[in-house]
Amino acid sequence: MIPGSFDYHRPTSVDEAVGLLAGHAGNALILAGGHSLIPMMKLRMAMPEHLIDIQDIASLSSIEVSGPQIEIGANVTQAELIASEDLEQHCPILRETSLQIADPQIRNVGTLGGNVANGDPGNDMPAIMQLLDATYVLSGPDGSREVKARDFYEAAYFTTRDEAEMLTSIRFTAPPAGHGSSYMKQKRKIGDYATAAAGVVLTMSGDTCASASIGLTNVADTPLWAEDASNALIGTTLDDAAVSAAVDAAKAITDPAADGRGPAEYRTHVAGIMVQRAIQAAHQRAN
Amino acid sequence: MSKIDVKMTVNGKAVETKTEPRTLLIHLLREDLNLTGPHIGCDTSHCGACTVDLNGKSVKSCTVFAAQAEGAEITTIEGIAKPDGTLHALQEAFRQHHGLQCGFCTPGMITRAYRLLQENPNPTEEEIRYGISGNLCRCTGYQNIVKSIQAAAEELSVKEAAE
Ligand SMILES: Cc1cc2nc3c(=O)[nH]c(=O)nc-3n(C[C@H](O)[C@H](O)[C@H](O)COP(=O)(O)OP(=O)(O)OC[C@H]3O[C@@H](n4cnc5c(N)ncnc54)[C@H](O)[C@@H]3O)c2cc1C
Ligand code: FES
Ligand code: FES
Image 1 (cartoon, protein in one colour):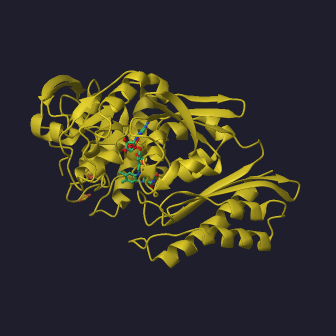
Image 2 (cartoon, chains in turn green, orange):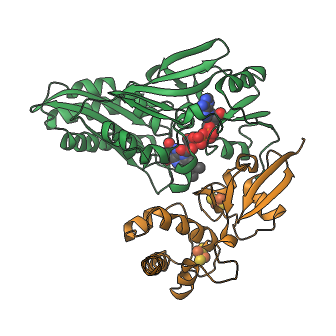
Image 3 (tube, chains in turn purple, blue):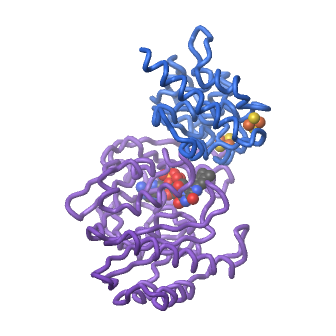
């Protein structure tokens, strides 16, 4: 399978990349790790006339942790997220999630920016960014702007990013020390997208859940932040009644497609089980 | 579409060639450089038969444009044995422990294992299985591949201790 022809660019700065994007608006795409884009190009489902490879833009490859504030460059790979001790200490759900994405070869090249900018509901990181209430930093011809991950996704492959904008980094506040988190993903095999997956971050104050945030992957045409499900946990002891209320609230917002992973009812059912297991694991890990 | 210059180091040798931007690395290696060790199994980034080492990392070369590898150091299965033809410990172990049947997956499997053992010289069985989870084999059932990698890891650590 041979992709269509294109012109290849390798800028060394964000300004240069944005200039290229804007100059070819509508016909140019950013090439990060290429592990979502190249398969689409082989299928001719993407036929950009210009590809802008961002590997030489050094500023996109840093992970900065200052206190609870975390900023991750768009071009940081999943393997780099896994290897970061700072992230493991402050926000271990990123490592846990990355380890469930694809396989070692793909994680060596696939980037966080590509994963969240792609807009494929199967990507695992967008739900995590929504539950962390992360902010995406976009650069365009008129400067930069910030968009909440919770407001970024419109439909499958449609986001609020303008064609002439690129994602430069992702910012969020790490959950407080002592929080518990978990990402539970059901898939048919290594390298498969989720049948359904759920991420949970929560904090406990004694026996009572003080805060909770739940995100869902691949059970609608966008990632989902399960606000009602999260609220169903807060103020409870995470007893069975609270957990099942959260599971029901999470299932209520799903709207999965039927595909090779199963009929819609099944995928909603699995989403509920993933939510339940992720709450349980996060609870155990919290202190 | 106009061609672009691509320079890279492949198995220690400097390579300079002209190619279309859309040329995939696997095609450049196999068709322009005659390195037919890395195979095209699935062409969809699943099977790992096309695995090569790019700047010290295992990648699937069916899903990398040659242009992206401009300036890179690449090792393929052809670069794993010593220049005098002495097999690498992994190659020898695959031979001794029946780590292959048809051999289609083997170049990717060994190239991946080569990097895995540098990342983690003494992997547990579970770490080996997880480390090669991006490489599919339709013949062996993986059992003997895992054994081969374990044997090579032991052999390499014995050698290292002797040095
Ligand atoms: C076999 C296989 C299995 C996989 N399994 C999973 C999985 O289980 N879970 C999962 O989440 N992913 C999975 N992936 C996808 C993989 O994680 C991708 O690497 C990732 O989704 C995209 O990252 P990338 O860096 O490769 O982006 P690319 O493929 O380079 O880009 C993807 C899209 O985002 C755009 N883009 C990239 N970077 C930017 C930027 N900085 N600004 C603006 N736009 C940008 C591109 O133009 C393109 O449209 C799998 C891929 C394969 C091949
Ligand atoms: S041919 Fe590249 S992964 Fe199968
Ligand atoms: S030996 Fe035949 S595919 Fe692995």
